[in-house]
Length: 517
Image 1 (cartoon, rainbow, N blue to C red):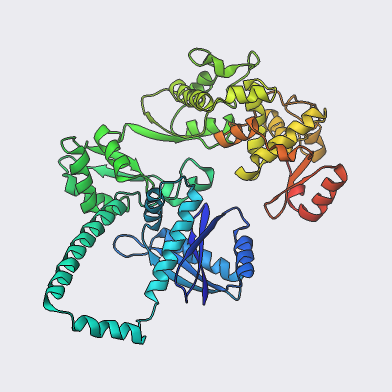
Image 2 (cartoon, rainbow, N blue to C red; image 1 turned 90 degrees about the horizontal axis):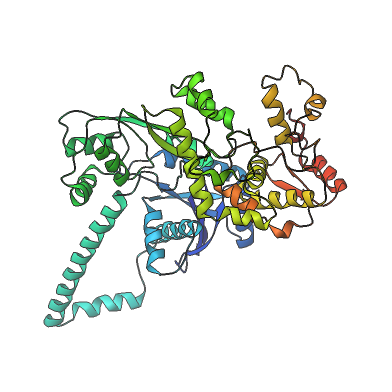
C-alpha cells in the first residue's frame, strides 16, 4: 500500500510518500497554505495514484492533544471533503519539526523552512510504517535466532556488554533529545509578526503573574499550568544552566505560546511586567489604523495628533529622501511587535518604528535597489505600499510590482482601486459624501490613480519588508502584462490586453469585482 504523509502547519504542509512494502519514507516539496492547498494535495494524490493519507497529530509533553491537534483534525475533515475517497489515519507526534531541523543541520547543506516541514512529514510517515510493521516471520530470521542461541559464552558476554553500552548511549541520547524538545516554544511554526499568524490564539497575550517570594520552581509550575512552556522541570534545568544567580522579578507579564523558555526568562529577569506593554503594527496597516491602536492602549487624541505633527527629520532624515515638504509619516511606521514602558510618550513609539524602518531599509540596501528601478526612496515606498494592499499573497508581490512598472512605462494610469479607497478615506471615511461607486472613482485626489497618471501622492499604507523588496526587485518574467485581478477563488489572474482582462473578470471575478469601494 502506498501512503502520503502530511505535516500540517498554518503556513506550509510538509509532504512525504512511501510504499508500505519498502517502508522508506521520501520527502517532497512542501505545499504552501494559500487557499489552494487541497487542490495541490489532490493533484499529488492523483499523480501518484494514492488515496491513503497519514497526518501528524501533535501532542504535548503529557501526551495530550493541543490546539494544533484540533487544527489538524479540522484539516482532515476538509481534506475528506476535497477527496471523498481519501482514507485518513493519524500518527501521534511531538516536535517532529525540531527533530527534522536537527537532521537537516546534520547534513551540512542549506535548507529552507519548507524542507523542514517535508522532513517532519518523513519522520511522521516512517514512525507510522514502523508502528504498523509486522514482526519478521521468514525462515532466515528464524535461523538467525537459532544461531544466536548456540553462540559461545565469550561471544554472549561481549554481546551483552555491547548492548548495555548501546542502551546507555540511547538513554543519554534520549534525554538530550527530550531536553532539546522541551526548551522550544509551545508553538514553533508561528511568527506573530506575520499577518497570517498574528490572529492565532497562540499569539494572544496571556497575563502571567509572579508573586513576591515565588521560587523558580513556583514560576516553572505556573508557566506549565498556563500552557506557556512544555515542561516545568526542563525549564528549571535550563534556567539553572544559563541564568542561575539572575533574579526573576515580581510583576505581571504579557506572555504567549510562541515564546521560548529563553524569551520568557529574559523578560522575567528584566522585569518587563506591569510597567511594559506590547504594541503591534501589521504590514499594510495605515496611519488611521495605528492611531486607533494608540488610542486603545490609553493615549489621548491630543497626544496622538501632536506626536504625528512633530518633526522627525533628525537622525534618520535619509529615509525621507524625496518626501514632499509637509507630507506625513504614512509608509514609514514599520510593522512589528514592539514593547514600551507605560511612561513612554507617543513620540517615543513613533521614533522606535522609524528606527526599525531605517534599519530594515539599510540592511537590505533598499535605497540602491529602488534607484535601479528609477525611483527615489519615497517613490519606492509609495509603490510598495500599493503593492502591499493589492497583492493577495507574498507570492504575487513581485508580479504585481512588475505590472505597475509596465503601466508606468506605457504612460498608463496605475488604475489601483486601493489608492482610490485611500483617497476617499482621507476626506470621507464614513462614506456620507461619496456614496455611489461613480462618485468614489471620480474623486479628484492626487491619490486617485484611476484618474491621475503616475504614482499616488504618497504611500497609502505601511508596507512590510516582503512588499518593499518585491517592489525593489520586481518579477521581470511579467514584463508583458498590464492587468491583474484577484479572483473569487483567491488566486490572482494576469493579462496583457484589456480584452483578456475583461474576460478574466467575467470568468473569475463575478463577486469580488463588484464589492463596493
